[in-house]
Image 1 (spheres, one colour):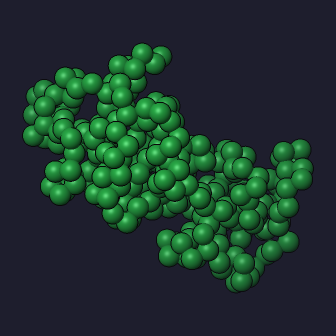
Image 2: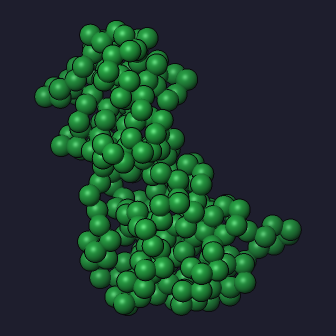
Image 3: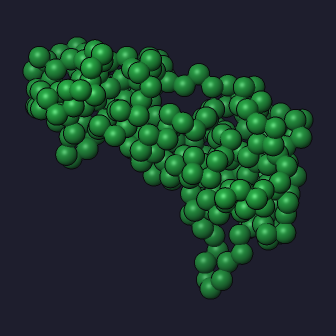
Length: 257
């Protein structure tokens, strides 16, 4: 059993929890808690740390899984929550590429995220994407790290089921999508009502930063600008809610239920 918080492996887990650079360098991220842990594909598990109580409670589910026992103190030390749930694992990251993402479906539905900063928003968008049958998500490097512990926790396992890629240049990614026949719609306050558009063919929605919205450069690359009609004094919706409204309208038009 590992009982010291100064153990080199435990120190590395702390680095992975706190540093996106460490996650990039080691090409992995952390999952915590039984729900997300048991959703993790076994072939992507790299290191697993569990308490004795967790090992006893989930003895059957842990059969065939290699793990290290840790003390309750160490578990509290590495946990990202106030109430540790007895398991933390290092997991290999996804290997999805933009080229592959663009070939997954004949008439795809994409979300393209620019500079989103709130982990909760990104986690909600990932969960919504699965629920709405979105083909995949494309985001730039300035968007919050999808492997941030708070994002992972809020996805509740969908991180493993929704394809996504991080790109260096969103305008180039948009150009690539347009070349394949995908129509690009920018969520923008100056756009037309989104109800007036047809999303039955290949479609991508551009969603911008929570406070600033889309940059003019990226919005200018869209085929059309659209907005969600608002009443009262509300100007716009939360980024995650806006993404939800848009993708469900697209699926409604496609006759999906």
